Length: 606
Ligand SMILES: Cc1cc2nc3c(=O)[nH]c(=O)nc-3n(C[C@H](O)[C@H](O)[C@H](O)COP(=O)(O)OP(=O)(O)OC[C@H]3O[C@@H](n4cnc5c(N)ncnc54)[C@H](O)[C@@H]3O)c2cc1C
Ligand SMILES: *[C@@H]1O[C@H](CO)[C@@H](O)[C@H](O)[C@H]1NC(C)=O
Ligand SMILES: *[C@@H]1O[C@H](CO)[C@@H](O)[C@H](O)[C@H]1NC(C)=O
Ligand SMILES: *[C@@H]1O[C@H](CO)[C@@H](O)[C@H](O)[C@H]1NC(C)=O
Ligand SMILES: *[C@@H]1O[C@H](CO)[C@@H](O)[C@H](O)[C@H]1NC(C)=O
Ligand SMILES: *[C@@H]1O[C@H](CO)[C@@H](O)[C@H](O)[C@H]1NC(C)=O
Image 1 (cartoon, rainbow, N blue to C red):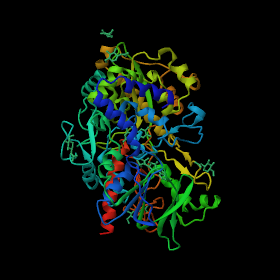
Image 2: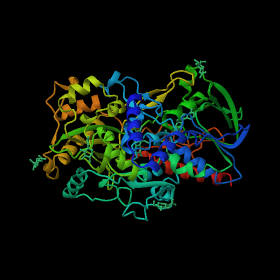
Image 3: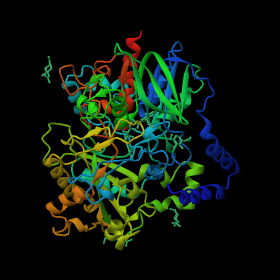
Image 4: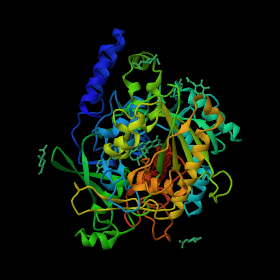
């Protein structure tokens, strides 16, 4: 968020409250939140466990390991604490413009993100206690049963759907939701999952359309994924429930858990007998070393975990040698990068039922949020409903979608403050060129998401400096069939968005082109394929860069116990271990991985 916007919003929040008590509490929250995790403690020489990264996974692991009062746990995080603004669900897209984002970009490509700023896709990653769960869009979605059975069939014992379901249940509390089927859903876990208390009438039109098309309207996180549903969100009382809020806040009093924020780990220390024994980190330009009696757990996320492994001599030997990094263990670290790519289509309507980011300035909305935890500010990142469907190109059997549609309560043309443009790296000039004629006209959007991409990318080191950003090659659309599914996705979105249920708003897809695609007739297959290569961008779901696999899989980095091959006492627990990306949004999946990973550690040290 730009400073000026922040001040405006802040003043509005401060000046317009009519309840003194709420004003007081909120002021206190704004100013004291920043201190919650700053425990004063003298760093010891060693701890039983050291966890690197307090993200979606790291917070879970810290909680579960410190349940054993005999173990000391040190949690190291490069970022700082979330605050009042990161809590506001509708402001989710703004968070990528704050200090809570590592702000990675892909390398220039001639295959994807062609019309985006400098031909690079934006890849926000959270830098906060809570990690990317502090800047994400709050959508709770587990993927399909097939996804986990696919992991298991790739040789990962213990990771089939039946094996992982108990850990999904363990992590969540869905008691606030109606129809929360206890066979699949949990109601005693730390992570709150709720529906937004507010929704626009567009949601009803969307769900009715699904029903008309013969789909189930229900819970995609239950028995079966295919169908239409309202968005489920990691939300507590209308506010963001990050992994920090779910897993760390309630246990800050534990005397065996030590949390350091604003520290960057730069290297894992490994003995000549190939045992990880400590880490080197930097705080305020001072380098420190700390040792682990039992294990080191990397939870730095799909970009930073492979970076850290490679900086420490664990990675592809040809690359490491070139960068003068002594090779300790050759492994295909950084390979197998997968992500969900998405493209937004806008539908113009004749009624003001939509919510643009201007909604965050509406006093009645602010008051409603502040006093009642209700209203449009509780829409998770502006996303209101989902559909998991199969295109004609889907060759999977049964309950396996290849396309997701996300209903947005506003169109990209309503991106008044530019937060969505920032998330997508969409150039301002192009924005006005494309949306100039309809800026702020009532519109909603449907985003198409390619759920099972065939293309694979890669993360590499630029040099041997721990401060350098890694090089990220997403290789979207290296496999042409990925473009074709996106083209089918457009057709699907158009049918849904122009269905008879949306005709009460006279809904029409917005016809547009961009300079790179003007030579093709608008919205034909080839034109859409051109738009896809030029404008489609990341949903922020990078996974897979430290692939879990059996010992005879030469691409595997960790085994099914999440232990790094060839090095003792070192595990990876975060999104990077996924062998195949799931057909959903990964936050809840990564928390599940962390719940299961923690149990594996407990079992190993029993
Ligand atoms: C814009 C956006 C929207 C998204 N929306 C959704 C959504 O709606 N639903 C959903 O399910 N998923 C969503 N995601 C994805 C999801 O949030 C992430 O996949 C997930 O949070 C990643 O968890 P993780 O534990 O693997 O890594 P992270 O949560 O990224 O945690 C890694 C942590 O390690 C820290 N770290 C990294 N390197 C170091 C170092 N060297 N030293 C110390 N600390 C370090 C980082 O600062 C970070 O806090 C979204 C992502 C983005 C970017
Ligand atoms: C789960 O959520 C419900 C509803 O908010 C709450 O009453 C209950 O205490 C929560 N359970 C746990 C274990 O936190
Ligand atoms: C840290 O060190 C770098 C280079 O050594 C220097 O440029 C920077 O100003 C220092 N930062 C602080 C906060 O001291
Ligand atoms: C604010 O929201 C209220 C309730 O939805 C609406 O009636 C009003 O017109 C909005 N005000 C502005 C300035 O948009
Ligand atoms: C929008 O268009 C539809 C279909 O033409 C019409 O029934 C409806 O009354 C219009 N709504 C408004 C607010 O003009
Ligand atoms: C690895 O071994 C298993 C069982 O021994 C076998 O089924 C599988 O095909 C092998 N995988 C590879 C990549 O060689």
